[in-house]
Image (cartoon, rainbow, N blue to C red; front, side, top):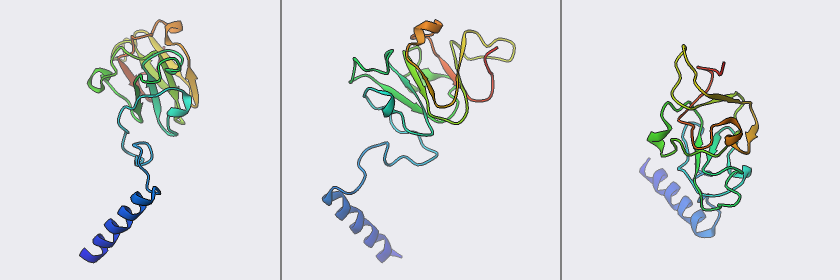
Length: 145
């Protein structure tokens, strides 16, 4: 078994030296993990099967060094991810709608909320009074009403 592990390490090292190994966080992301918050601009920066929050409206187009937060699941407190009350635009590349909330919702009160349908985006969250106001995102639970 140790020889197999040594062979795999040697193969990966050879691929890395040849430039053929994936080197970006998005390329090495498994289906259940979330890549680190990169910087960048544009809708294409959001990987398939994830949703992304962008620091500025317009998907950071005028701010290519701004943050993009990439998620796959509900996030009760975006502040714990460094994204609380910072999003200016959003891309949903999931097959389910996501719900952006001004504060963490309860069944009695969803507060200001915006549903973003699957495979769509919102250029300017300010049009929905949510620019720099999104503090949680839910999938399935706590829909907007």
